[in-house]
Image (cartoon, rainbow, N blue to C red; front, side, top):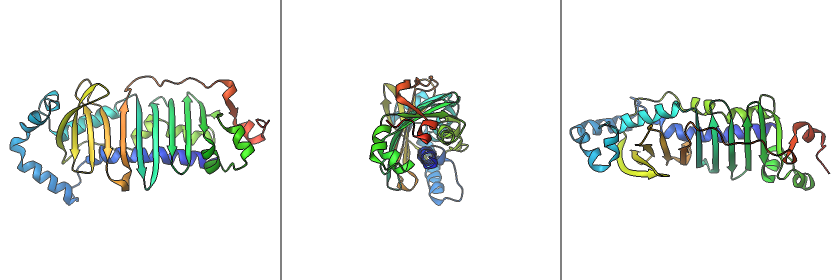
Length: 275
């Protein structure tokens, strides 16, 4: 069971890393020549920066003429202040294709799913100190080492239940915590070298697009709080893909699975679930 918890943490950390590079990773680095070059170019164009964003996109008006870097900083601050959110994305991490759809809260509640091309997929629910994990048969086999087809067939469709603060559920549950996710995104602020892009809309919310060269794109809401609605990272070394954020500050929509869908850790260890 230790492999399940480790791979759950690795998957979530990869998503956090991709978001960190695209958003917090825009922070200044004086030792990086590319960043310095971007800053110099921005300085040369400073005379037109205040006018061009308004011409390129209606999003510039929503931020009272703020620069792309300032808007990125506001988006980071808004994200770090969220009490809950939904994160949906597809990531390519060193050739591993990962999909994620998680609702997370600072209280530690979460619900959703994670898939990995080489490992299978699983659903996870955490409410208070209770956690449920429902791997597919591929994940049971690759991560937990269950290879007996008769056992796999009986495990299929069941949630594994256990206390969220005890092994083997504790590592998975911690990875499903918004506080943990945000802590991996650094301190943010002082973004450098972003350029203002086009106005757009994500699920009905008006937004403005910010570009970090060809490496990353951030779409920031221009209505309500300046939350980042989409982050696209084009660097495969740090996890290329797209992450959408939504449902900010909304309760995690989760219910406990039905008793008929659940086996306990004790059932799994003793084999009591086997018919």
